[in-house]
Length: 439
Image (cartoon, rainbow, N blue to C red; front, top):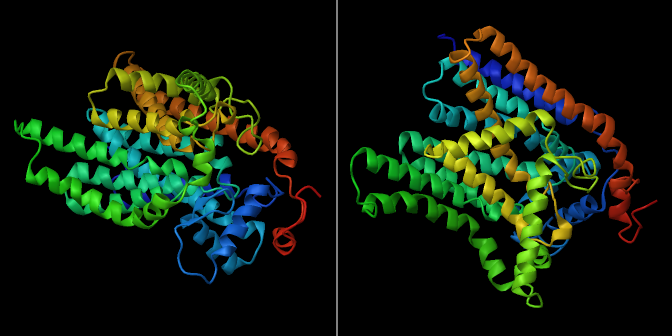
């Protein structure tokens, strides 16, 4: 097999298909599902409008406290399109459409490192399959259809990850600077993004270590090594400086409310019990019992459909088994780090599919690894025809998409009348700040 997505035309067609699929999933009946607003969205709009005409501030105590980066984007959207639910939700939708394209490029680089001996065609098909699974994943596209900043955070993290993967390939410091900027922006976004910078740093460390091992150079702490880390850390700290200075003298309100390790009235034993309860609920979230919040999920339904759940579990096993590969190490760490926010918040908040939103790229990576491993085994060990395997692969990802789309539009949408409780237009709640939400 020599066919691969190698020409600009073929790449453009691939990206166009992923883009159109994302547009359909995110914008189909966009104003109708969900039709109403939620209290949080109204508070988000008030926070965004409060920034208008004022000097830049990195953090606002409104809406239980938020870094303001995303809210400046909401403000721009409402100034451009007017104060409406469409304008309020449009940024999340646009990032929801763009992010699967970014994930495609991340998977494209990662798969080539993980499966260097696979056929060129399979190396190109697997990232497409992964992007398809991602764009049609209910856990993902649900948060692209209202105004939470989850898709914005995923966009920033995946852009940063793509640039550091470019550095891993070409060892040019400019890619570290670009990665650092987006990691810093992620830090300035939703709270889980505060931890992400550890992932690019890990890949920088693994890349330097691999290069020195190949050269039989065992002196890790050198001027060149320091320069590589500083190329990331200096721009990263510059980007996060305003918010960090603010938080050095002010509490992050929401994080302080939820962060049980800081509760001085609890014993170490109680905190340990909370941690174990969170581990149990977070692990069960994927395949057993998901988020109960009707805005996040069809209450209690597992976060992953049966197809992705099986692929995810198998892929996780394959990655642990082949942990020497740095891409597997990278996504295993990304996966574990994405669970940290829920492990450190009170158990009655969990499982929480919003706070763990950044785990989805790792889930898709593991699922893609599973597809690639099974495909390779069936072709070379079982001697199954390549065309038949491609048909099975297409059937699996199509069945996954149908399952999640059906669950969302047919079942989850039925709980939105209760979950999204504000029935009047957004402008009404802006003009009547004391109005009750339920009308």
